[in-house]
Length: 220
Figure 1: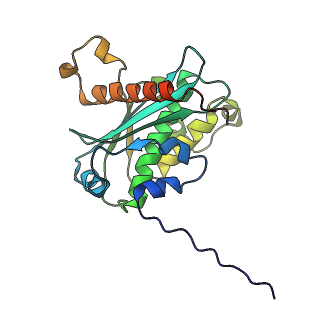
Figure 2: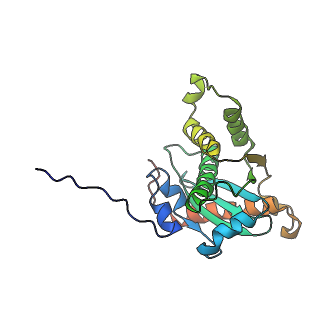
Figure 3: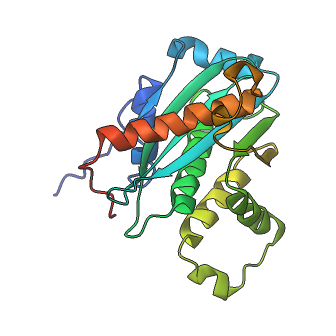
């Protein structure tokens, strides 16, 4: 008689291990994250925040056309987490890199909520992006239950659909808003709004990933 082996799921002992256990399509977007605070206090800081700020940005190299993104998760006064990663696709646009940044940031917050079991302890997330076109497209998906087949032919429909599906998984409303990018070029850092400062940080994170990962295969 053939013995049937029972599969025992691997124990998850940390948030980093949980991120490492995520599906193949999601894991590369989240694995390059950093927590400025100890992981043990991360969940406490999430629940203590009056509101959560999520800000992302995307970048495309003028040298080789490679795309990357950066994102920041913060309270109204402090950065709580940040990360960066690659934008995938044969032809990368600024829009696509921005889309990957938005998807990664939302997936990271969703993973945090699931791992630390915070589904009913958070109530307000403000998402800021400097790409108005991306915000409008996601708003369209949220407002229309039925998407016409012709829209699925768009080159970035895969990202738009996954971002919208991710937002629907939250148990509370995620508010999308526009923030003007690169405000540090015309204003002093001390004069910038919090979301503008976070946008500048996200832009730097995207540029840093681009700089240190030029040989990464992003065609998948």
